[in-house]
Length: 428
Ligand code: S3P
Image (tube, rainbow, N blue to C red; front, side, top):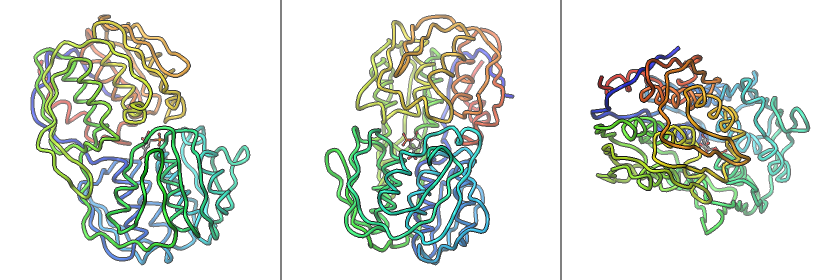
């Protein structure tokens, strides 16, 4: 259980843990390449630890201590058939990307996860991977876990993904790398491109174009000696939000990943009226990194929809908290993907925010938040979803009295040390 109470302001300078998406990919790709890689700034959250455990079960030597990981691999062809089931825990990125990798491996494997994973749709990766030649089965015709895979000789496909999902795109790219010929994935809007960037740094040629990406199979990955993972903008978002809604705040977060496919939250905060600066921009392992400084300024409601949605998909729960403190109404559209995240994040945020007195409605594809309501402390629940738990804890900072968040341990999925970091910058 986590407790937060009405705070005066946010002041200070912090860093946030490593980017979850990039940490997963660093472990996966260095396990697929031959040789030794050192990963710095790794996110030691539950999801990324699940990825490490899967590769260990396939014979890769991985040592992890805090945010440092050493991967020593004999390469993709040396991965061995796991004796045990591969447990992805709560991690959608692990199960979807692993499916793409395993689709090309000539052995049997079984992927399982927790109760939340068991409810999340898998046909979006299972169907194209089957079309490429992998044998995959799962509950309800392959829609749900457990998934059982027998990889095989793959052939390249052209796949038009109905959803803008980096997990789907990445799974198909990773299978395409092992397939005969060229594989092309088209997506309705550009989703995060960490897979494309990191594979390029491993010496793989990809062709990114408006609307999609192509990869030629059979290329060999070149191991990276060092991979530096930037701070996670999706974790930084919670701290930025706290400063954005508490008058008098001034916060700097150093070393945050600002890949343009992830910075929708910055665009939204600016459009709502925040005083936010992106400084010292530099490139680390092909990823842009910067320091972010936010000073409180009054906020106004805005409309959010279309191509920006994949660029802020994980930030919508905390954006709804920010919107509750803005003048006027915020409308979020085109975000039906929220229903199939760790929880149905539309329903859950509406339920939790209403407990605090916020005026918020769920819609078919998003939310309508009427800002300006004074929040009151409440007994909230994370529903086992890290981002819901953190969103409610931050809402507690502007609510009268005290707010408790039940099942707050879920926060360790992406932001171990959340409470300590917050306590460093909360005043009053
Ligand atoms: C992720 C992609 C997103 C995001 C998730 C991480 C990734 O999911 O919500 O937290 O690392 O590729 P979708 O690709 O399914 O939208």
